[in-house]
Length: 341
Image 1 (cartoon, rainbow, N blue to C red):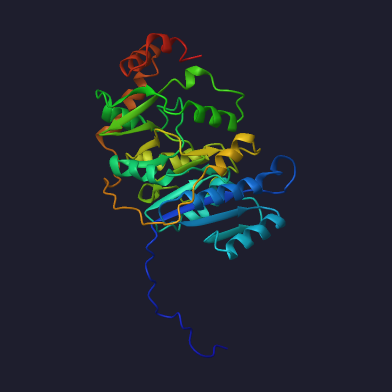
Image 2 (tube, rainbow, N blue to C red; image 1 turned 60 degrees about the vertical axis):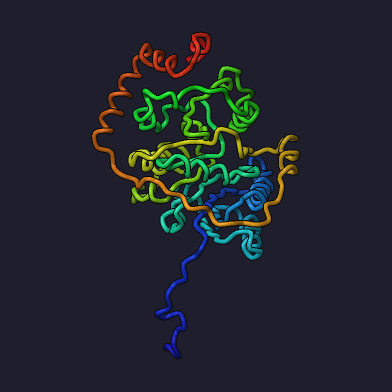
């Protein structure tokens, strides 16, 4: 039996002034072994996010098969408004599928998809959105520069700037940060040849690095409208991130970029001494403003440019041609000798 009338009936939803959604998938099946420090690292990440963001945002956390103790802690964070939206999956459905739970309903024009082990630094979102402002075709922007990814979903950039001096190797802005990233993914150290120069693009006074990491990146939501309708078959890895997060912006001629300097750290599953110092150095950004107006080109399917990209990718399979291209783009002969091994 229904008695009375639902007060929500026929009510018009009020548009939110917040235009930036942050999605964090979280998988902590237990708090032992590999995951012993996972929740404290996630909490550090969440605090750094709240402290450093200059612009208003809403945070969505997807608990993807987390243990009950972790879910209880997440619920406490939600009740204290440190999380705006909490989605709890009883079983592990996989990283990308967890992201899709939130991503398919995002209405904000920008969405940041981040791992739960990222330490955000001051000005990270200011710098990211400045890239969107300067580069009208920017579709994906990460606050963590990445090395040796100059042809990772970026051939569309090469076609546009192949004969331009704006696209070239430049000195790495923050070699220490590249070293930190390499160690966070399990490398013992990063050889000098990986952190002396990096492929960049410059427009006016703004320099960016070509391509972007998966662990944290901000997307123009319009470039993700063509993600596959079916879910990923992988829990982690495989072609999941490429198929759902890399290919859709690239197929719509969006640029994949990173900030020239480093504005976030990928932590990994263990805290190190430098991390506490970096965390303590973060300054609170108390006043949050709205993202300034950003005018950009609309996503569009490629036509003739598609064939130009195919030709270029085929040409660089020839090592002599690739080497010639690297030299023309600023790599020295000495650097070229160590580029391939």
